[in-house]
Amino acid sequence: MIKGLFPIDKFKRLRTPFYYYDCDVIRNTIQEIKHWSSFSNYHIHYAVKANANERILACLANYGFGADCVSGGEIEASINAGFKSSEIVFAGVGKADWEIELALKNDISCFNVESLPELAVINNLACKHNKIASIALRINPDVDAHTHSYITTGLKENKFGFNLSKIDEAVDLIKKSSNIKLIGLHFHIGSQITDLTVFQHLCIRINDIQDSLEKQGIGVEHINVGGGLGINYQHPNHIPIADFEGYFKVFGSYLNLRPNQQLHFELGRSIVAQCGSLITKVLYVKQGEVKQFAIVDAGMTDLIRPALYNAYHHIENISSDGSIEEYEVVGPICESSDVFGKSVALNHTERGDLLAIRSTGAYGETMASRYNLRQLPSSFFSDEI
Ligand code: LLP
Image (cartoon, rainbow, N blue to C red; front, side, top):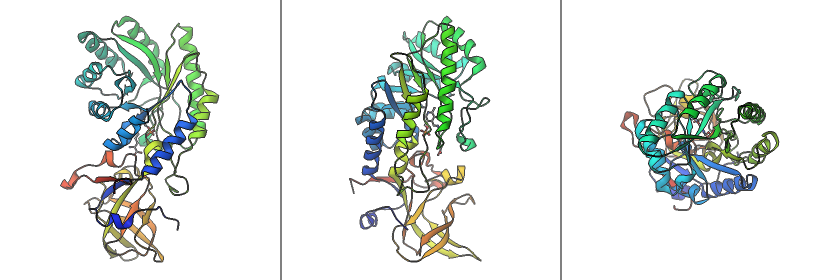
């Protein structure tokens, strides 16, 4: 079994569980993205929800990414980490008034608006603060992302965005509102999309929508195609970088951008997932009737993806070279869904061994909770330990 390279001696000094971020992986990923998206009209806003660790945010701000935020907290964290306000977009179906006001005061670049009442509230608050809010309409293109139902967002009837049938009403309202300016169209159809033809369908749908809006005399400065590019959870060692070449080429080939039109992306998972591993210690190996359980000190409070989405994460015993055996890798929480992997092939495992739960840099640390009054996991970077 090929394993990831981990500084195991250094790990032994650290209290588990913790997230470990490999700086080489993140740097290589960023270079790959820069390489395939190096057009002056392409702008990448990192989806902060994927991982809001301060060092990750600072690193991405430093490389010139913008930020895609979904809360006031994310806007504050992004500004503190060095993202320029003029490169921040703010999305979400339920923006609270204080969050809209915070965004207005900081002159962020664009609100991705998801409903008629939200348009009205942003207009009123912008008027109160004597501002003109730039907005993009989030449109539901009704494209099936072929991904997990919990992370599919572009189908007709769901809470996100405007359905195609509501666009005319939204445009009418915008025309009547003096403190909002329509500058973009926003789309996001789902997450962990590995079939790139899905993005082709998105482009074709966007082309139709742009054509019909233009017939009504409406043109926009930018198209925002959201995020969603998937990663390879099965083989993090062999395929540590997502298919950015294929991804960016789809948009180059299929999307009809107008002259001077800007293209925005909101990638999260594909930027940070593979650089992170959750490192956890085996507390007990318990023999069941037929199964053996490796009970570890990380739980669903540290990484909820397996419990919430039945998500697969590759798991390695990084302390052992023993023969391969099967284990149920489970956490200590009093919930039967607190399972990281069933029938996991691990090198012979004993109490005290360290396991690496791979590809956890996205939606791992950010989704941690304090259920059972557990401590939040800490984090370490490869260049600091
Ligand atoms: N833009 C919008 C409007 C989004 O809703 C999302 C993710 C993104 C961008 C970033 O998508 P990404 O490139 O990361 O796929 N917790 C789930 C994922 C939820 C994604 C929510 N929206 C998971 O652990 O799989």
